[in-house]
Every structure is written in structure tokens, then in C-alpha cells.
Image (cartoon, rainbow, N blue to C red; front, side, top):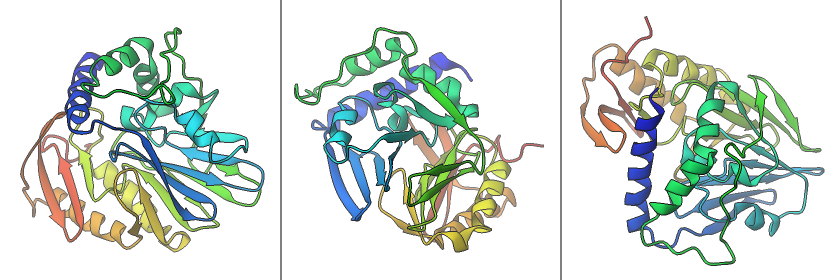
Length: 287
């Protein structure tokens, strides 16, 4: 993967988003007594789960403002921070925390997006946004300021009265993971199960790999009732079956797709009921 190309594409997207969203501040919505969905400029979801002994922060947003301070206004419990995947709209504030968990396959890109040069370039390309002093976060001086620890498939986090399980779901990125809260039966999916999933960026894997990840979740569907995605509102667990049918129609050639253009490049998009998948016709199978 060419890091310079990724940097350019991400900065273009940040600049475009900044011009249309002048106030990217945090808002928190309580999903139940122990879960908050924190939105960062209405572009991504950050989730906070509180347990008896500790709390978990799932993803860290864009990184333009002080997420750590905002989270501490909600809970004072010891905090476990986890990145579902490497993309900078989900790892932007990771450098604000002492330690962040992720899958090893996405570690290189998380470090890159947390580096001083990238952070400075991101702030420069924020367009007309003005961060209030109360939310401003300084750029760290160290080159790679994020301290990563790695998790594997089936790793469990214990918050005291609830267990959060890691499920590795390569596809959107090589190291994408979902996090299953066995108590609430919520599956926190990052960008693996959005209504619209991108499989056309440079770091995405072929569609047949992504299909295996979806089928892996489908085999566990009795363990969760609700998907909490990286973008958008909660989705019922039946949505995964719709994603599977969408991907199968692409692999079989039944759906050729319609043209789709984005800041990370061109692709084709197919849909089945609620599910939409953008793909690269050159990356259908890994064989």
C-alpha cells in the first residue's frame, strides 16, 4: 500500500468534510444505562461502555478535539481503548490515550495516521473549523505517539460484570475487528457492517475474504441482537444476511454494479435490500 497516496486521499476527504461541517464537536446519546454513542461531527460513531470495574472506548474518532477529556466527563472508571480498524476517522484521537488495543494487521497504518506529520497536516486541512479552547488538543512531539497492544480473534476483555469478545473480520481492512458485548448482545462493528461498506480502497481485501468474515458473524448471530456500526444508526442482526447476499451476487457475476466515485477512487456498487457494497472489479477473489 502506498502510504503517500493514502495520506493525500485522506487529507482531501478531511478538507472536504471540514468545509461542510464547521462544528465537529462531540455529542453523547445514551443507548442504555451503560452504553453511550458519541458522535464526532456527525461523521462517525465512538462508543463508550461502562462496566463494574472498568470502561471501554471503541474507536477514537477524527482526533481534532479532546476526546479523552470528553469521555472523562462521562465516566471516571479505568479506560480500555480499542480501535476496530486503522482508518483515521476511527483512530484520530488514539494518540491521546496511554494505550490502545488493535489487531496487529492494522498496526502500521494506525501508527502512520497518529504520527506528528500526519496530525499537523490534518489540522492544517481542517478548513474553516475553529476548535474551542476547551476542546483543543495539542499535537504530540513524538513521531509515533500511539502506544499499541495487539489482540487476536476470540480475545476477551473483562469489564467486571460484562465480557467483550474480539472477532477478527478482515475485509474493509486486513485487521478489522468487531467487538461483541455478551451482556447487552450488542455487536460493535466498526466499518464492517455499515449500510454502505467500502471494499474498493487500496487497503481493502478481496470480496471473497470479506464474505468469509460476514459468514463468520452469521454463524454467531444468536449471540447478538443489534449491530452498532461505525457510521449511522443501530441495525438489527438480520442485516448481515442481506450483506452476504449482496456480496454473493457480486462474486457470482449476477450484479455487475453501477459506477461509484469517491475520494479514495472509483469502484462499482451493488445492493441487496438494505445492504450496499462498493467494490473494485479487479479484487473479487483472492485466488
